[in-house]
Length: 519
Image (cartoon, rainbow, N blue to C red):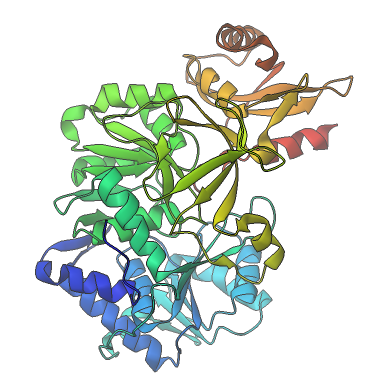
């Protein structure tokens, strides 16, 4: 593997790398196509626009935009100028944005027209650090204090790239905030470089002739690698989609643009397989797929591969590590596991006292690798809890078998202790979704009338199955046949949908809150 250069501006690095393929399509979004040459020019003009707005090195801008070709222009243009883009989820509330605006103290906001109303509500609640509002693809007349992105870009000069170090702060991402306020995760230029060199090229095997499509959006750490870092590091072509990744929307892109690399999440793969519109293998061109965000059930992976003939490389990453650090790999894939550590990363499983656990035992997952974030911004306590010297404590529980394959056991705060023994909710869920009646399942621990914790399953059924006592009993018996008896769900609750994050992760804590509210 090459060594990351000490001086690195990742935007100018990509521009130089792709200069020989200026005419090739870099991005294809819902309305247009952007070549590598056009991308490089717009990135340099974006840097010039930031300077005209009075932005200085290391100052921050908010990037609240849908997945169009403008997103990478703003992100890379900021890096090019030494300005720090703060990329945020497009599905948050005005209260969330007000908190982020105040916490990050951004001086400018770049926003998609469809998201301008929620931003304006947030700005009315937040301190007035943001002096500039720039709107991409406006859907209505702009307010007096805003300006249109294309006009700003057209009037901007082409600016040279700022010389930055690989260890210099490049961008922020905000964590999901499932356990409190969102945390500002601070990353460097070198972190982007390392994820491409350690995972994208050797594990994913991404190539210049690939067309890639990610259901996960660019504002996620997973989506940022999928749709920007990885393809641009080899000169591939990226398909972007502004709308929600429903099975029908995904099928449309898979059959129209025929991407060779597809990045999804387990809940989407399950919905795709359950859809009556699932296209035949002959209509798609996928050679490899990935999954992250939640453990991929073995049954879903096996059925997907049988239908499409390509593997899903399940892995785990995090906002703090930027992308995947444990992954399955082609030729040694084991569905039902997360695979093995990506070369270049070290992984340990430790008990509650910090000692290594025995093979097969559940332990807390710790990771060491070169793409780790620097810190949580203005949150010293959380930084100290998670960033422990060279190691990052992930908050995940895992087991490792004798062959070195890691299997997800759940988030640390999701683990259930029944009769003095740990039960992994993921293990029970993976059995439930193998039953022909089950589309999705989530398992939590609830106290019984004696105050003893037992497992309870929330289940979304497939069409044609009745949510009645006989179905519930059949599911309980099915789990008993495949797992130790103490793990089977004592209660089955049928529901229309499960609470999830925007990345598709099941929010078991919301189910626990629901249970607590009914006590």
